[in-house]
Image (tube, rainbow, N blue to C red; front, side, top):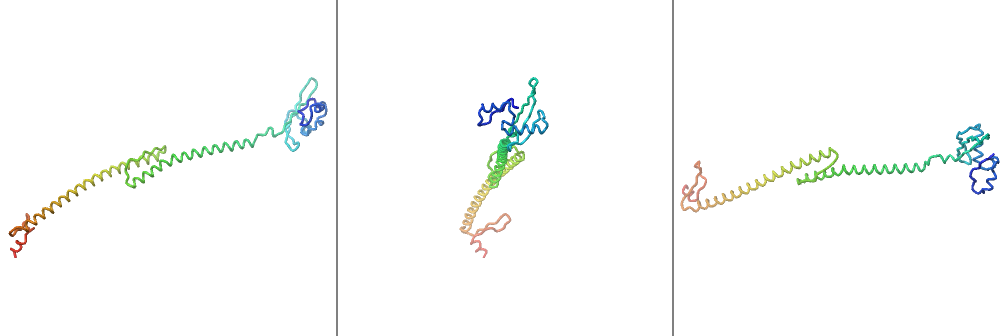
Length: 231
């Protein structure tokens, strides 16, 4: 018989519910209670064990424990839906999805940042190479990278650029010197042509026969009268 009652179901007044005290448990009309006691009796009334059973299409857990009150022994029944003790898998799954999404987003951000840090020095190196290909040897921006191979490549390119710039400056200086020499030779050539012209005029206009020989007594110039004299 019932000594203490559970909470009254919805739609049952307190006075009506209290009338069920000291009545058999079946008078409660609670199928889950009846099913729990039936399961307990079927298992030979175990004390303190957790019993699992089905009632109303739901899974329940129950435990029956003895309680001594003087010379009387009372039985305390505790029951609850099994779902109350099950983890909130849906909420856990959603939390895991959110966490994994955040981790993936952070990983993608770090990967993108790393790719940018890696590609930016390479782009500068490529642009510097194109400028060198155009024979532009002006100082170029410094390249900083945590990748030792890229840093070594940038250092080698900078050294090569300095060597090419020095060679270009030397070539420019030599070209300028050659231009001055060519200008001087042209000026000398013009002066010699002018002198030769004057000498030719003098020889041709000399009133008598005239000839000019070199250091080896080779005839190099003469006028018309000299030619007439020799027939």
